[in-house]
Structures are given as C-alpha cells and as structure tokens.
Amino acid sequence: MDLRGVPHVDLDSVLSRPRLRDRIYRVGVEVEGGWGKLPKGISALVHDGSVRGLGPTTYIDGREYPVQTGEISSPPLEVSQLVPWMTLHYPQLANQTCGLHVHMSFKTALTYQRLMTPSYPVTVLEYIRQWALQQKLKKDHIIWSRLKGDSRYCQHVFYADEQARTIGKDHDQNRRGHRYTVINYCHSVHGTAECRLLPMMDSMAQSILAVQELLRITNAFLIATGKREGRHVSNVIDDIGPDHDVTELRV
Amino acid sequence: MSGESTETVLEGATNLMETVNIVKRGETPISISVGRSRHGAFLRIKTHPMVEDFIRALGSGDQEDVKVHGRYWAPIPSSETLLVYNLPSSSNPGTLYSEDGLPFVIDKPGRPIIMETNQDSEGRILGGSDRPVLNLSILRLVGSSEGIGKSLGIKGVFTEEELRNIKTRLGIAARRFYLTYLKPVTFTVTLHSQEF
Figure 1: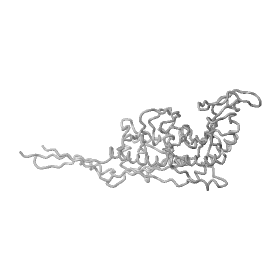
Figure 2 (figure 1 turned 135 degrees about the vertical axis):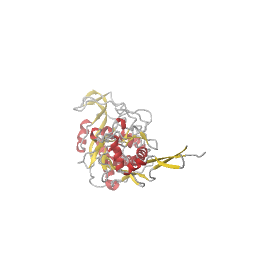
Figure 3 (figure 1 turned 90 degrees about the vertical axis):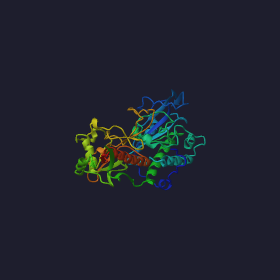
Figure 4 (figure 1 turned 45 degrees about the horizontal axis):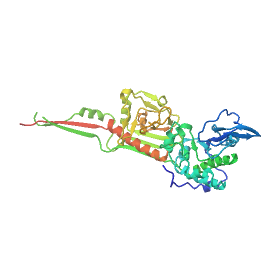
C-alpha cells in the first residue's frame, strides 16, 4: 500500500508531556560507515555494498590507517545501553551512503501489532521531518530525499503483513512485501520492527539524538492510539436444513 | 410392480441420525471468534457436538498434545493443555479449497494460522503464485463443543485488516468443510411402474 495520502497521527500533546511510558523492550542499532580502527570486541565488519566513497585512509591520533567500510550491528540493548554502545562503536567516517537502522522489540505481540498500521510510518516521517527542521539540517542533507520518498532503500509503502510472515532476507527492492520500506515489520526474522529512514547523521551526537527521537515518537504513537481491541466473529449457520436429493426412476 | 411406492433409502440412517447429534435448521454448527492479543492472534472456536463427533471419528479418537505438532498455539487460560484429535494419513483430506478458491488444511495443528507457500524451508522467496494456506486445524481441538468452546493464542502478528480477512476466510473455509463432510443429506429414490 502506498503511504501517500495517509494522514499522520497528531502526537503534539503527547510529546509535550515531560515523561512518556516506555513500551520499547529492547533496541538494536546498525551503524554503517568506515573505521580506521575497529572497536574493541569487533574483529570484522559486516559487508554492506551500499557504503561507498569513504577512505582509502583516515587519521586517528596523528597516525594513518586504512579504512574498512561496512556495518556493525548491536545486540539487543536495553534502551539505557543505547548511548554507551553507539559511543563505543560509532564509525570514524560516514557519508550520505551510510544508513542508521534501528530495530525495536516489545514485550507483547499486541504492542507490536498496534504499530502495524500505515499511520505509524507516516507519523514517523512527519515527526522526524519536524526534528530535522529543528536541527537545521542543510537543504542538501540526505535525510530530505529519504523523507520525500526518493530513496529505494526506504520506500514509502506499507507491506506489514507480508513482511511479518517473511522468514528470509532477500535483496529484491521491487517485489510486493520487500523489506526496503520506512518501517520493515521483520517480526519472523528478528522479532522487531525496523526503521530504515535514518541516515548516519553529521556527528555521533546527532545520530544518537535521531535514534532517541525515533523511540520517543514510537512511544508517543502507542499512547496516542491506545484503544481496546475488538473481536471478529465468523458463524457458519445451517439455514436451509438437510439437503434432500430426489431421484425418480420409471420401470 | 403396480402402484407407486416411495422409499426413503436412508430411512434407517435417518433413524440412526436421530439418536446422535444433528444440526437443526438455523443452528450454528461452527462459530469462530478472532482478535489480536498479547499472544499474537486470539481464537475461540465453538462447534456443535456433531462436528466434534465427526472430527473424532476421522481418527481413532486418540488425543495428542498440540505441542507435538508445533509450537505456535498456546492454551487460554495458560494452565490448560491444548489437545487435538489424531488424524491418520488415510483420513487426511489434504489441501481443500473454499468457494473463493483459497486453500485450507486441517492437518497442521500447532502451526501458524496463515502459512506461506512461496518460501522454502530456509525462508528464501520462491517464484510462482503466492497463495497463503489457511490453517483450519483448530477444528480438531478436543472439547470444541463443550461450554463456550476452546480458546487459544496463535503466534503471529497481523494488521487489523488482515485479521478481518482471516476471520472471513475461516468462516468460508469452515462452511466449505461443513457442506462437504457434515451437512446431512437425504436421498430419496422412487420407482414408478408403468402400465402398458
């Protein structure tokens, strides 16, 4: 389903509260970029063919190092562990080809399902747009093209049910149910909802703020859209009585 | 032969049917309620005793813990155990098709409510038609005709629209199953003699 024309949910009054109930159980972050020195505990990067134009070398404390490009994925983190992890693992180099994917998991399937509505990715788009304006990001910043729907890695379509049932990971960006959407509902693969909207920002601090804003928007959305779930009933009714088949034979 | 005679071929069977549970006109032989819950999907199935009798008679009547077959179903309340009637391969109707042409099965207890057919066991997306199979194996639940029926949670996450679709498909598939295997049928054969 195309997200164009889908209205966002108004979160203004919820976001103005000093504290929001945190329904996010664990968060995972994938940072992309270039490293001259790999973080402690990381022996190799995950290859990512979309990362380009970094290196070939970089300087750390006056010494030149060859740049390795790729991706580092965090384990499932408690929200309080997000900042320390990103601080330790952030790449030395990043550019507009680098994405910052965020995975969120929840304690119950019901909370997850409440995000399975087109208004959730549309609301994320609207409030990240507002955040980007507040951050005064330049007009040529890559985030604007992602917010517009110009990125094939972050398409403005909604395939929640198909994505949730997909147990593999393929790279087809065109088939119905592919994973390259603003929110990828990869429940069967990771048990998470993945936001693919954010690029690596201009600094580590700004990237952390972007992720924190996404979590805040998600919690606010769950508060603003809370309602009792309905039940749907299907009855088979025998309303014509037994079948009576009559055959007449003349002898 | 002279005169007319009308014989209801299944008169004896009709008498037999009167001694067991039959579904009267206007009754609801199968009712299925679905919703979203902390488990994923919530389902409640309530059947007429005739339906449960039929399902039991497909096999030996033995009951199996649904966990033997799959881990997607959870009893509600959690203190209970979900049991299903066994279904030998000789009685398995295989893949059935409802009036809307969509496939359903009753041989996958414990498995997801909707099963993808366009993925292999490794999860790679296959080509060809994408016709998810509906899992109607909840018909095999022991105790579906007692009290308010049987309630269970099934792992999986769904949009509201998808859940409504599932509800509709469950109803259409259950109706097809009932009409194919359960709806009472009376055959009457009349022999008329002719005078020459």
